[in-house]
Length: 281
Ligand code: AMP
Image 1 (cartoon, rainbow, N blue to C red):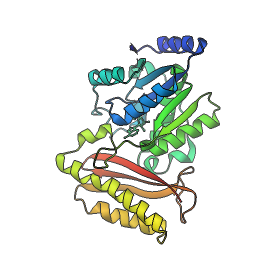
Image 2: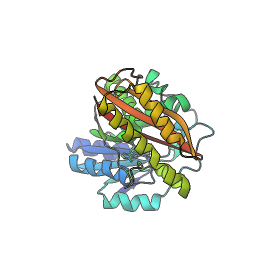
Image 3: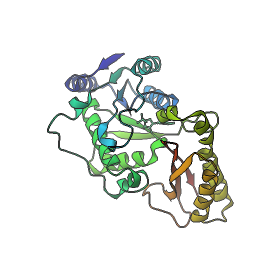
Image 4: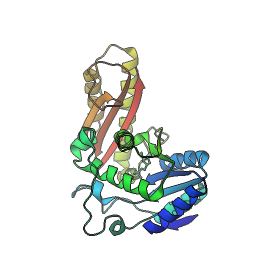
């Protein structure tokens, strides 16, 4: 396994591989790898000749008061996990190489970036789309893999790829959960023992919502109201949003039709967790 920190070197490696007719599967991450990341890596390994992952905690997707500085980092462990999952290259650039002095260009993602997580984290998806496009231009993947865990991110990246006619395919993979249902996340490390226990309510509330949708006798608003009540029963929980939206357009749904995304963001103490479920009605 190679570790490449230099942008030009990464680009040359990727273009040499592509010239030889090899396919590159790419998994962008912020590191502190867990089984959620590894599921994407395994799929990329299965589908492609080469697997490249990036580990980069992208400053432009964090707001000033967010957790950029304390975001968990563990490169030693990440290297071991990547190697044992069959990664060929870890691209591990420095922030000042990705955003040198005088950096100016950003991707505007439109209204998809203003709702849900974008409403409470203005500019977040502008930063995400920008870094993902930069990484695509450096790693030159045939297929890039994203987790359904970040549902809004996946929708926005697919839209960007379509709108900008980028020559690659996006695959979205299911959420990997802990045994008790909590979605795996690097941020779970921040939770106190009590918060970790209380956070189980997120998946429980999503499952309750799925059950209610299947019974087909409640409107989306009644279901989200019920979910909020469930979540509020946990003392360390503070709701950012609980919504049922169209899975493609992210617009609120008033009536169930097609594919809906039940999604939420909830703080436990200072830690903001997200989770979601897609239901085909
Ligand atoms: P991150 O390192 O949090 O930026 O995540 C990198 C990629 O892994 C993103 O595409 C995430 O959606 C995906 N991912 C994170 N957690 C999970 C999970 N629990 N299940 C599946 N994919 C995940």
